[in-house]
Each structure stands twice: as structure tokens, then as C-alpha cells.
Length: 519
Image (cartoon, rainbow, N blue to C red; front, side):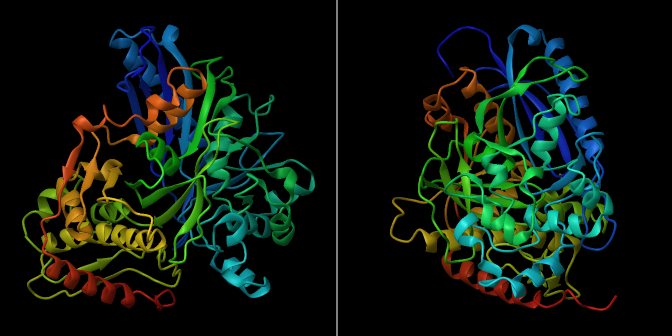
């Protein structure tokens, strides 16, 4: 990518909802070594989802060591050429730990967890403005999704958290803060920081000042001293300390996973990307302007690539269950043995046979925002086979993305120019049938890059930018990247597309108000 011939590698920690990876990239953005491990999902009650923070630390350590071993085995001089690492993480997932012992005071509460529903309902009644009270400040509605609600639950329900706060021994953070604190020393001087993109998902950061919002903290009774310092996405944060692989290497980039994917996809103002993972997340770069949605989307920070760089903002639509519904078919229903089998199974039929599946397992996020919704599968007849259900699961992912993009188009009305195309990434995009269904339901082209793991690449770019491996111009130069992209073009006629969308809306409406069904 860059013109200088000096060998330079950048590492990237990609800490996701179900797995951790470490990838080493060369200057041409090629992976020269990687390792991935899955970790345990804990479901203590219906709607509750937790991770063990110590298991996450161990997964990062293992991935770093093994990726370095693999790259070295291929003849790469990693020790001499690795310049820095970047970090990207599952957003909103919340934990509180002890400053003195370094131990978590409770498991990490995962972004999709809905235990805070009662906290949300209470605040909506108590605070003037209700659900949208904080939107003007932070861009986000009161929702189980965001970190502040999870932190309030921990403060109200976990004695160890409450006591640590009273003793000034508590530190709050999302997963990025937890990792950086441990990588840079932990109890021996670890740095307690978060980046602007992760901070923007807590409900506690003012989008304009890019600092913690004091009135919000006062309203929610959250002590400022437990919060990390907010930094940019691209700067030298600190160095890795003893007890970890790659001692003394700078940590130079940090972004929430969806923001990292925007950088990895080189999304400039007006461009949108959709990442298909456990959930699906669609972000559209709105440039240096904070745009408030009138159609159920979130306003969030896109990225700020340096302490003195301007902040780019985005409109976001978050979908809680995308790839997770394929895991459900595999693990709970045992219709498939591996996630990769769904494409072949769904390809056995040309349609869903009138079956519509809405995976509202823990409610619906954008643009509906219904935490009282639960999953439905409708239109089942004696003709329905597991192939029809598999295809309906794939279609559900694409319908949800379309719902979000329709809202984005409404919010951007009058500012869109030329043909709209959707950039895609994430593990599920290897599924060609899924991508074709997405293009058909959108009526717009879908563009898949050669490297679909753009989240890790975005974090690497941010770190490389901070240490001079790449320039911003090189990162956002899209011409050379597009040669190996795959484009899926719509093949469905408009009349059938409209009928299918109308049927989908019927299915979505059936999910509302089902959270209190008797067991």
C-alpha cells in the first residue's frame, strides 16, 4: 500500500461476541499470520447473556502467541518488523473490576442481554422526555442495549460492585478498557482508557464535546471517577507489559468493532457498510455532521483518527440477531451440523414456501425498538421442510438489513447521489446465497471485498496510521481495493419484492407483545 520498502507489520486484536482473533498484517494489508479461539457464552436466565472476563483475557493471550508463531513459521521476522497493534472489540458489553486486585466483580454483561428492561422502564417514567431524554446529547435512546443501563443494574444488584465504588476501588469499562488496562500493566499501573467510538455506545458521552456528559452522570447517579479517560481511535496509547506476548510493543489504535469495519471498508461521507456477525450492524458515514434520525436509527460517532483529527459521525441501525439465528439452527434445533451447511440446505428450495422467520429472541432493535418482541416463525404448512426454514432464516437477516437501510434512505432524503450500493463484511458474507438474497430484497448492488474480515483490518489501519506505516490517504484510497471485490446485483422483480416485504411486515407485527407469554 505504502511506497516505502521497509518491512512493517501491524497486529490486530479482534475481540468479538463469540470469539477472539489476532491477525498480523503486512504493509499491503495482507494477513501473514492469524489465530482464533471461541469462548464460552453464559446464559444464567432467559434473556441474560454473560462472558467471563478472565477467559477473554486468556483467549487474547493465546491468539497473540499462536499468530506470531504461525507468521514466524512462514519465514516472517515478526520480532523485528511488528510496529504496533490495534484493538477492536464487541461494543456495549460492560464490566466492573477491582483496581487493587484486578479481578472482575461480576461477569461481563453482553450487549444483547436484556436484564435491564425494568431499569429502562423505570427511567422512562422518572425522567422528563422518557425514552428519548438523552438522544440530543448522546444520540441514543434508553435501551437495554447500552452500557449505562448495564452499569446501573450492576450498581443496584451486585454487592461487590456497590462496595468497591464506595471504597474507590471500582473501575468501569467496556471490553476495550479491560483489555488495555491488563495489557499495559493491570494492578501495576495499567492505563484506564476507552476510545471515542466505544464511549459513544455507553449513553454517557456527549457527541459534540467527546467527553463524559456531567448532567447525564448526575441524572443516572453514575460516579465519574469509575469511568475511563476518553482518547481518539488512532494514537499511541501505551506499551504491552510483561506477562503478555510482544512485550514493549505500542498499542496504537482502538475502535469498537463496527467503527473499525467502517475504517476497514474505507467508508467516506455518504457511504454505508453492513457487518454480518452475531448481529448485523449497518452504519452510514455522515461526515463531520451530527445527524439525528427521525426514523428509528441511532446517531453515533464513526471514528476520530488522531487526537487532533476531526470526528466523523454516523447513523447506525443495529440488529441483535443475524448470524446468531444460524447458530440457533445448529446448536438448539440441530437442523445443521455447522454454520457453513446452511447455504447448501437453503439452496435446495427456490423460495421459503411462504415461511417467514423473525429472530426477535431478545426483542427487536432498529428501527423497531421493541424489547417486548419475541421470535416467530409463521406460514408453516405440511409442505414446509427444514430447507424452507433455513432459507427463511437467511431471508430474515436480509429483511432486517433492508428495514434499517430504508430508514437510512429516509433520513438522507435529498442528499443521496448516484446508485446506492451496500458494502458488506463479516463471517456470514462468505454465503453467496445470503448476499444474493440481500441484493434482491434491497433492489441495490451488494459489494463484498476480497478480505471480508474488515473489522480487524480497520483496527490495524488505525494503529498503522498512528505509527506511520500508512497515511490516511492510503487507507481511504478505494481504487486499488475494488479490483478483487465481488458484486451481487438484484435479480428479483419489483412486484415480487414488494409482496415479500409486505409479508415480512406482517411477520414482524406478530412478534410484538410476546415477552410475557407463560412458560
